[in-house]
Image (cartoon, rainbow, N blue to C red):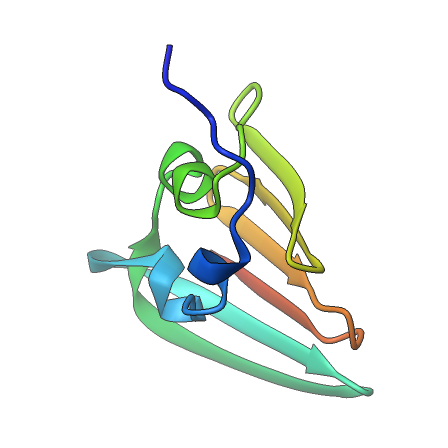
Length: 97
């Protein structure tokens, strides 16, 4: 059983939305919502697995799902869908297109 370390703000501060995307086949829809504005785009690639992202954030995934608050950012993930909600109310959603 791997050792789970506590969430580390130093790790998270360097992450960007590209950190969660694996290059390759597939398409992802990226939606950013901020103060009533909505930006939507499609990118090539696929989401990393729930386990990979849990390891990146230093949290534990349960039953193929992830729900944690890391450095004030609420992260929810299940296979094929990632949602992040920031302190200022902005939201980021990445899902299969």
